[in-house]
Image 1 (cartoon, one colour):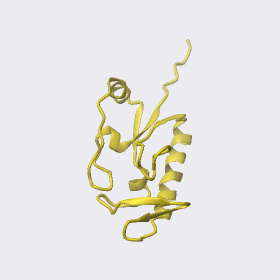
Image 2: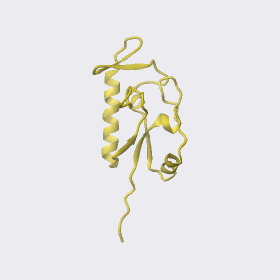
Image 3: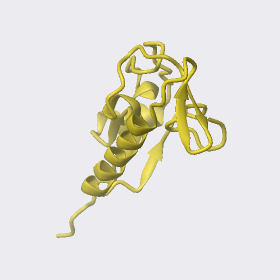
Length: 113
């Protein structure tokens, strides 16, 4: 009898409807595929900013080179780095190889942050 491996996907918590964005809102998306992943227990919600210790709501932050700074000038790089490390640890512990992340986010975006 062969063992079927269940592949999990890390998903930005805000995309799953959790109100974790800087403004206390979510960016929930409607997707049959994402709903199926959730129903199967394969979608793992994660917000690196909250996991890194930032509150919700919080001041908007932007990347400035290697630093992350709020619009008021507070350096929150340590919190962003901590959240990124926790995301990596979760992926390694759960064998996660794929992620669905929120574009435009200073912690999740890749093409536009």
